[in-house]
Image 1 (cartoon, rainbow, N blue to C red):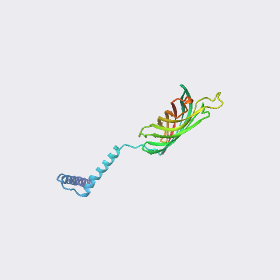
Image 2: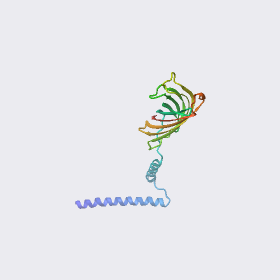
Image 3: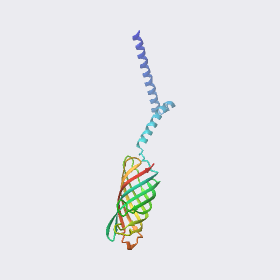
Image 4: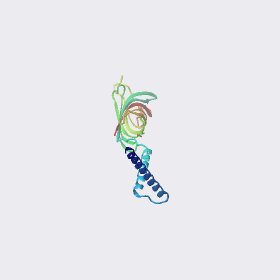
Length: 224
């Protein structure tokens, strides 16, 4: 009795497989003959194909790096001036705040303090406006940037030692700078900065050279 029951079950499953094969062959013949198969068959064929195509297109699409609403910068280093042909080194601190304009372009304002000696003795103020290009490279921790600025600075020329009054000169400054940073987190980048400034409108009697170069290090905070 048990043997007969098992045979019946096996026969039923075999019959089901045969019927499924016949249906598949019928659908294939309809397609090859140019006839339209039933709508439920078309859906079974089309929907998985559309899903696979969508997944493939999404996987091929380039990933986008997150953009910044703005940045806060803080750098400190050494400024090399020239006076009457001699090199003069001064400590400098620079802070900036910028907002995203479009794409990687940021625009903002900066403040610069230049001292007579360490640690930033009798700092001379200055500041201005700047434009910065800060591309966010996907999948990379390296974050380069370049900027250009225009401002008004007061620069110290003499040491405090032996001077009854510290001497300084006011000048306009047109600067270009390059930064190279490494992202510690999404919001914090540690950077090194090299900046060249060309001075305009300084008193010629001060002996100030036409330009200066600064080497700085610091950080940029990215505002999400």
